[in-house]
Length: 145
Figure 1 (cartoon, rainbow, N blue to C red):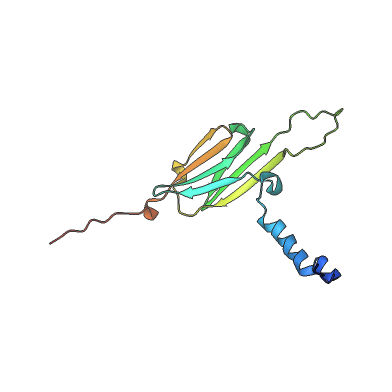
Figure 2 (cartoon, rainbow, N blue to C red):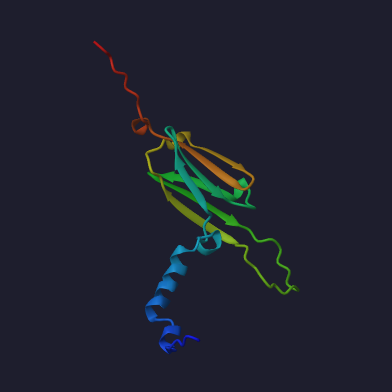
């Protein structure tokens, strides 16, 4: 004996609410890359003594990047320069980004900007900002009487 299931055409059609949910899920939960923002991807973390920013800048040289600190904002500026484009070629995919960028990063703690160190290795820029003395954790010893 077979079971019959009633066909409902509205069940197969996506509702407006489901369509909007899918739109927002795709727009806001997809990972953000360098190409969509126009700025490099970064990691920002802090230790007891330092605030560290690591930025992915593949293909750049140290002279192509400027770093500045104003108050509690670290600014990274630079430019991805385009290699010679082949005019006779037909490009099927062209995802590499070219042009200038600027990324402002709010720092989570006060830092000593005059003691900042920056290193560039294998396309990763690492900026180490020592924390100001007043925000470093202090250990207080307890005297017993």
